[in-house]
Length: 361
Length: 164
Image (cartoon, rainbow over all chains, first blue to last red):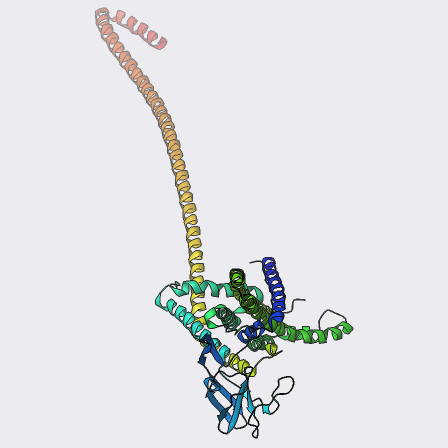
């Protein structure tokens, strides 16, 4: 795909995202007074959660309980999320080792020792509780691990395929996987980093590409209930930090020179450019982080918002429109899953390429 | 705001998961797969190169064959030419030889004829002489019945012999 067509596709995707979100959020405001709150539902799906909510049965939520791991002043505390009994309002208190925990808006608070009930200020912030470090296996962590299992089985199985044949012919699943790997190598790593240095970065680029892609795809599978892993800022932040580390660790003399003392320009210009380049160093991974987060989250929001229309208008007549639109957006999202994984990887490779480029003045 | 605030737990688990995935996949997937792909590409490259070499070799062989054929043809041509020349030379030589031989033989014959002729002449002269002597004897015997006549005859004969 040439860069121009890519740009066109991205523009189309972005413009759809923006117009539809605007349209959807207006509806939400109008409907807030009624029973169904679209904003709350969407945010609940988009954000992380401590339990895996599969569906409601007879007004009761059916969930998969996940472990909650907290690091408090007394060390690690571990219990299952089911102990909160699906309470997310902070009223149900879980007592562990003399510590009291409540869950409020998917956050775990530790009540102060003398408090028996959580108290809120005007902005709905608990006043008599502190937040312990939360290492819980949340919905996103759980889905991320599922994606890891899928990735490991796909790729280790395809790697095994090569051992079975004597002449390195890809058979079975390897026949499907190999073109993707060769694509990452020939269309991402080689042109961005260069034929001589790309090999060292192949594991990183391949892992990041497939990790993002598979998590993007998982986010689109409805029964997994919007496990929005790649649309979570923590996830994109971590990957962007890895790219930042790889880029700056592999940065050569030429790269640092271009940041701190730009060659080929007058001295006042060098001084002027230095802070800009230093900011640029950080802006690159930040743009990676925000791009992936915003694209994937926006996709989830649109689809959920379109579906919410049925409940907002409280009529089944809207359903065909909703379904048609979300199918349309869903198809675009399938493309976006690959495009975003591709863009993240291409830009990471590009930054690595820029950091390892030899001086040619 | 909460949407764009990264949760510490998820950052922690993502980092650990990503590193784990990277290490495991690098060892058990990327290395063998990329290795196999590269091996195959190398194989294809070398196969193509050897095919190209074989083609070049074939061309060389062809050129060689052509050259050898041409050389053989030229050689045959030269040999034929040489043979023709030899033939012509031989014929010419034989002709010359025959001519000289013939001339020699003719000369010899001529010499022989000449000498034979001379011998015959001498023989003839001898015969004539002895005949003449015989005749003369007879005549003389008749004549020389008297002394005078004898002397006269001798006289005349002597003069005759001197004249001869």
